[in-house]
Length: 360
Image (cartoon, rainbow, N blue to C red; front, top):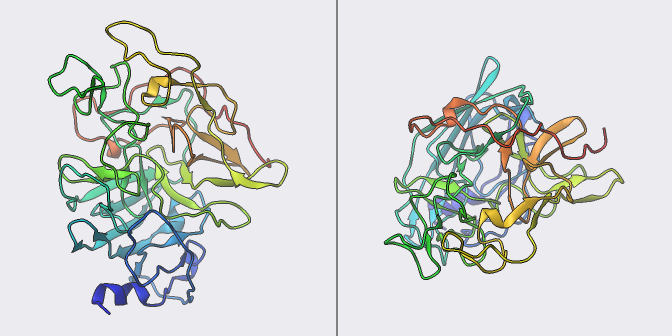
């Protein structure tokens, strides 16, 4: 057995406060797909100062307070196609009314799986982000922006949902459908959805790929940290948005007491896109963000969040917008990418928390 596989096979030991958060060990073999399985584990108590192995962990903690995850973590992911082992490092610390999440931006699972086409190899990227412990809803929601990251998951990897691709048929790099994959902004019509049908962003089995500097980031469901066997209370918290509100997996208990997946309130528009030189034409099929409209037919509000048992949070969904579509609170400036005017811009002017509250 290799040293890497031996590290994965060892027992899990957790400090008492984190025992509910990380309770499933990974299998000894490497992961080469997005599938997630629960495995036997043991519990123990460690003092402060220890580092906890979260390689391929499935989380269980549902606390919306980021302070409940304060500890140091490590993992041993593998770049599958390049056949290289890496070390991930994450530190969550409490600093007054905020939590600081510091990482080298490496995931806790294998990446660059079969079929992925990363433009650049994954590189360690030192990252420090801050979120409030007690986030508050803002008077108006804030739109996602390409100038800032949207969230950070508890494995230290950022979420960057928007693409920089759009319909621009006159561009030199346009493909046969008239789309380009770089150079567009949220001011452009017909922005490509990275997880839409027919798009080719080269993502791996975890809906992730690299930016030009080698930063690994998610565009949707990470296919990690939670699975389809949640606790009776629902999926765990898997990360925190830039405004401090938690991000849950897909499952929750609805008002009738049924454990099920949360449903997005967005629907595909009916019919076909407009004709004309500035439109790709064809039927609305989800290739572009503008193919969708908010209809409120699901469980979640326009930001893809809802309140359950008094806790507002965003939920991973099986359809657009996949994780979140705006901020219900005020995003922290630490998530800016460093470009001029990097703070996200105000959105549609609707109040947050339009989703249906459940169980009080």
